[in-house]
Amino acid sequence: MIDYSARILFVAAVDKEAAALPEGTPLLVTGIGTLPAAISLTEYLTVAREEGTLPERVVNIGTVGALRDGLDGVYEVDRVVKHDFQLKVLSDISRYLLPEVIELPTSGKFPAQGLATGDMFVSDTATRDRLAVDSGLCDMEGYAIAAVCQRFGVPVTLLKQVSDPANESSVGAWDDALPRAAHELADAVRELGFLPRP
Image 1 (cartoon, rainbow, N blue to C red):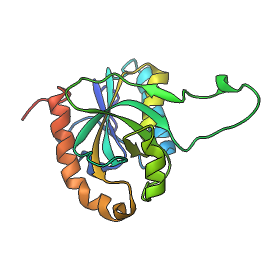
Image 2: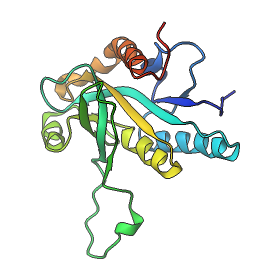
Image 3: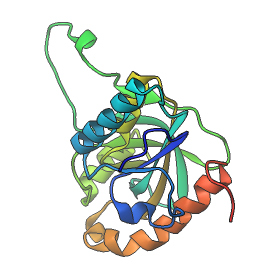
Image 4: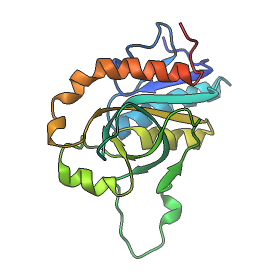
């Protein structure tokens, strides 16, 4: 049974990313990719709004690829873009589109990076280099979660842990990186005061 009265709702793509959160922590596991993330979170927030129990904040925890050398550990996301949505037309259709960039406030307790979200696991140097022009990190859900929260008027924090270098060596490395990621993310949410310290 899903608890729709959470004050802070944690959102992760897969349960292994949230494995180090204490038992009973309000957690929504969406599945991988922008559509599963958007659908799952929209369903949750719709019911919560109907019941008058929208969360005070959504905290998205998850793993990311590093688009630039030297990035490691946990980051707060200060801006997020959807990198695989490109629409070049002559007419003005901007009123039908979501924002190209979503800016997010951060606490200042962790380093901040821009995030590029898309429905692909980045595992080649050419794509990595292209995305690194505008963002330091890449994932498959962050933009969707931020956009849904923006639509519902719910503040959102994106906390991301670097699991791989988003290049050819990333294939097969992600699953092995999940236990460390889960513990670093759990420590980070405690550092930000979203969970009590043990």
